[in-house]
Amino acid sequence: MSRASYRKFPLRVCRRTALSPGFVRITLHGESVAGMATYAPDQRVKLFFPLADGTLPALPDGDDWYAAYRAMPAAIRPPMRTYTIRALRAAQREVDVDFVLHGDGGPASAWAMRAGIGDGLVMLAPDAGFDGTPDGFEWRPPSGLRRVLLIGDETAVPAIAGILEHLADTPEPPRVVALLEVPRATDRLDLRAPASAALHWLPRDGAPHGARLQAALHRLMPAHHATDAEAARLEIDLDSEILWERSAAGDHGFHAWIACESAAAMAMRRHLIGALDIDRRAVACMGYWRLGRALD
Ligand SMILES: Cc1cc2nc3c(=O)[nH]c(=O)nc-3n(C[C@H](O)[C@H](O)[C@H](O)COP(=O)(O)OP(=O)(O)OC[C@H]3O[C@@H](n4cnc5c(N)ncnc54)[C@H](O)[C@@H]3O)c2cc1C
Image (tube, rainbow, N blue to C red; front, side):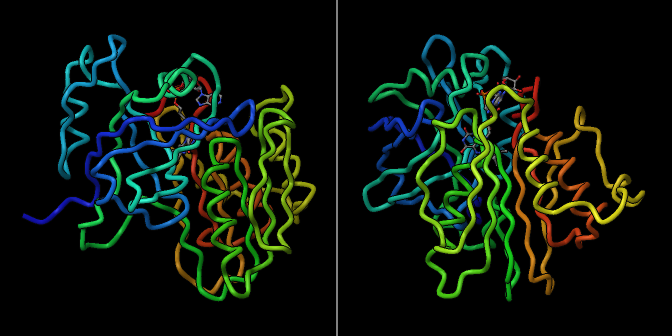
């Protein structure tokens, strides 16, 4: 039988590192991490959190795990949320996940606020033994990249931090502009980036989610003309669908990677494609979360 690309890793908290008032890095340990892989700085994983009584029921595995998970009775189905591998140290059996602390309103944030050494969860992550085409990431810049625009709110800061580190290690990095919206000025993190990169930290300070990002994008790249009808046709109903637009290979030179609250992400995609005539294949645009809803 061929191996699935992702598999379950039972993990325990071995370290908590406060990065800022709004971010905590949780380092997870497990013997099986020796067989975990990560392929890109925005590698996504699924985390399964314990039920209210602290137990974590057996979870389905294999390629059809999602259908089996959805079929579990609600009372014993553990909450599942999507996160980013911030760093993997397979030799030390450790993996870091940076959690945004947005309060008690969701199981993931509530868990991260309280998680102590020894607490357990299960991560569904890439299996290093898989020999097919790796997947589960959207950082796929074209060759001949000259200009990069990274846009994200705090949920995408872990991925953008990894992308900037990757670019910093590139011999001739492209010109990079990053727009990073965070809850408060004190959530600004010290990131390693190419020397020429321009990082714009945008404290939200109570403004609507994504508003500071949109204003910064409009200042950086003012519209050429009113949004055209073709861009409007690309829009989706965010209440019934998840915004997930991959970029595609091509000789674009310019590459945009956007991940934040879904409505804000869609508005910025509209601006780039519909009012600036940027080739949509040069834009990866992901709704990482949806205001007022839980996405699993
Ligand atoms: C590919 C991918 C990678 C991601 N990587 C990370 C990561 O590395 N770190 C990280 O912290 N998040 C990350 N996220 C976002 C994370 O999955 C969501 O924020 C998720 O909703 C958190 O789950 P929860 O249980 O805390 O809240 P939920 O139960 O999902 O939501 C409860 C309520 O809180 C709201 N809410 C959810 N997230 C936020 C937020 N950040 N701020 C304010 N309100 C919110 C929802 O709209 C809802 O009303 C990623 C998402 C995707 C799709």
